Length: 381
Image 1 (cartoon, rainbow, N blue to C red):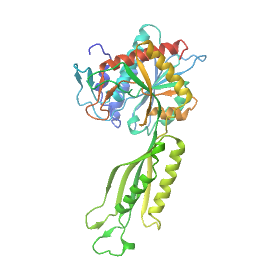
Image 2 (image 1 turned 30 degrees about the vertical axis):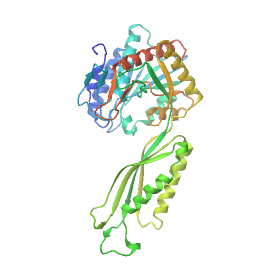
Image 3 (image 1 turned 45 degrees about the horizontal axis):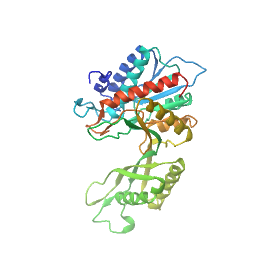
Image 4 (image 1 turned 135 degrees about the horizontal axis):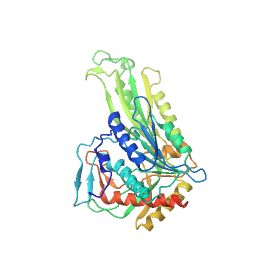
């Protein structure tokens, strides 16, 4: 364990909305990367943590490679523990994705020491991916449009057992997209015991319930289009017709066409359950991530990564994943650019206090990153 550098990253409380904590980690990364020969830029927005960009020397005749990370976490670092018997480190965000950041820094330091740090290399450190990047999509778009290929360091798939790490991993060639919504229904409400005419009973919970049932009918499981109501609240008392009710839900989709279909049908459904406009309906979308589409360019780049892994004795398989990441946004902003995800470490229990990764996976990810950067330096990537 003592041979793994940069583990101090795990000590920073970089929860997405903890601006002070995230910026402290940005401070650390900025100093570290300047030492490694990068030029750093801090993008800043009001009421948001800083977005860090680091670049090596620019050479106009060569392609540009983008490595994308996020440094925000869901939990604070309550405790950092090691399990030497199973070869694990437990820490907030270590799998998603501080372990990937650590591995990349190890690789970059070795390349710097060997005087083989490639030009035209850009690193991005997003401070808010876990809350669906509300402030910096313009930065993602700008950097995506100036790059020729991108590697994103979300966690890779673990193929071993809970106590055994296998030299086998995945690279993500596609992801489903998603959009999240807050739906609030409001009405006059009233006393449930005294209002007896059906036309006068305005219960917002009842309308929300109709919407939930209708939402499920809009799904298309054959096309991997799904919906989920994750939170629900409403009402004031058992003998009161609920004056308001609120749900938070999401839709997930594999293609933009399916997104457009289900999005338009949601509007139709809202009108159907409220035909006389007796209720106030407020639908607020947030957290949009488009799908990362499987494509020839993504598969071609994946094949090069697989070949690099073989040289290191690592078996790499292509994976299609359901969850969203900033890889989807990068591809959306520059569809001609190959984008691969899952370049980070293998672990488990992400978004829980028991999140962990395998120590050997940090070492392996660092080796693979170094090999890929050498391939890029030689023009083979």
